[in-house]
Image (cartoon, rainbow, N blue to C red; front, side):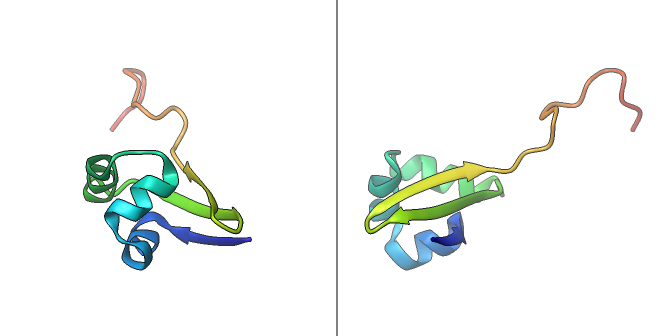
Length: 67
């Protein structure tokens, strides 16, 4: 099982192929990388890929949090 970051995966496969393999559009790949999202791509088996994102919980700051 090989795990890489989304930007490394795109550098290896190309944006269009990475999007096809993950079941999303090329613009979605571009936006995720441009936004600096922490997305990891795992190769489950030959040619089968899954992406997951590490996000803080809660993902949006609440009004009770002090800056």
